[in-house]
Length: 222
Image 1: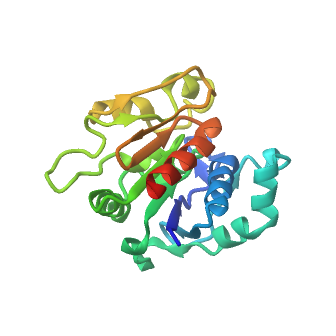
Image 2 (image 1 turned 60 degrees about the vertical axis):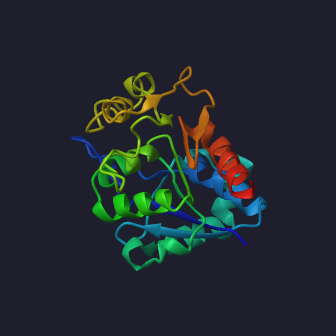
């Protein structure tokens, strides 16, 4: 049985106006549903081990979102283990969902950077969606280069941020990824867009979360 570790943010507010935030529900629920269908073992970790937060509960009428909230998914996410206490080398893949929360606590976290580097370099699968690819920023491989340098990457775009949370975020994710050498791929705002480059899979926005999981599964099954 393949094992997937979903790493979630612990932040619940962002920006000068303390905008409420958390993990964006469909960005964790839709991949969770795909991993479940593939009969994978799914665990959750968070950076601090405190109870994570969910955003976009207004989307609970979506079938996968509702199944996550009322089934095992949300119950397990609330019990997320502190990342420092997890043997991350035991997992075939790690996945980082978005929401604005990762923009608060994932740009620089040293353990998270080490986890992603180690996972990537042993050819396990690394996936992230929307603002989740902020976790890839500042990850340096063993040769000293940035992980995203020369990689085909998707994330929440500057155009999307302009009409969503630009006053709240500390920087624009697309720009930051490009500045570290990413080959950025975006589509029209809120369109589905996921991309695999080797064992790295990224997606643009909530509509892309299912596609990221599908591409991760395709790599794991290959």
